[in-house]
Image (cartoon, rainbow, N blue to C red):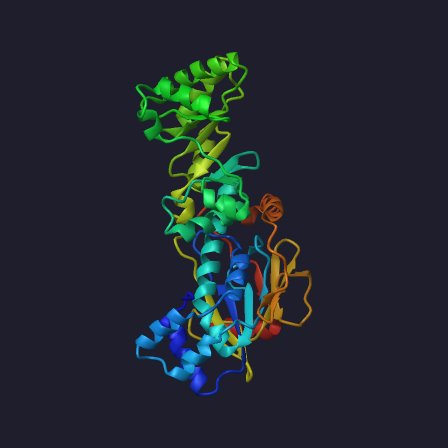
Length: 432
């Protein structure tokens, strides 16, 4: 069964009965304001295009819908041959964007545009939510730090874990622990060891020796028992490896006062002649905790970020919506207080300094257009995203953000740099 909500099907049947089958345009945008976010990183387009191409109702799906007693045979026969045939315009994945501007347009026969609503929102909202969280973590860690997605065990389901790995990599992470994400998306894999491994041996140093011999780039977990004693055991194993012509790659800290312990561990490693052994830090990290760690002089080569990334700890949901903006009768606009939607198909023009201008589609604006046509006739017009290439572009963009956007402080967020063409501005203001 495709991912649909019941009301999409009941509306579609009513559209079908009443001949409301003409072309309509729906727009995706994020409502403003978004707490603690000065910008968003748009994501999820590639998975969406693949899902739209494969949107089908099988015979078992139709039998189940028929058993509900809500749908007539004529409508179910309509669903039997359903294929998405519409057009999609979207901003490029990884683009820095803002609430209040259209990020994706779907133009299709009304029933088709309506039925894909939940699928679109599910894929794009979550991907953008995690990519935006990951971008903040990238900025907090700095250009030289290595970041690994450790989120699968706390993500809300297997598909969410895959999308979290993809979205965080798009936003500038370096690797993921999620093996299926590595296979599916070509993301580099990274991992260390668990406390259970250390506890499976007679003592800590026996565990370290075994792992160092069995793994080509060993990172030893120091805090199963006593972190500083673990560091001394790691040094002993590092000496044995060096005598055999190998080197210890790194050590990991996962609990306690990470900043203070990392400094102590760094001193132990350096004093014993192992300044190249890397310190990798994990343990309920996010941008706030990484900034605190760095401010206190913490020593880290890289960070493993899990729970607070995958569930976007400080912002667990994104208010992205999908609204009808145009049909055969012309532009449509929702005017509910606080929930205004822009009428008609619109374009976003990115001007210097991330000053965006929203205009009706087809009206020329200053700068470069953000939305491009990525699907027509139900078939994608662009190749699958080159994720590693795009990741590099996103990282460069993030570290080039104006200071007022790159500021990660939760308070005092500026208004979003989005303006509207005169034809739209009065409508937006009037609906606020």
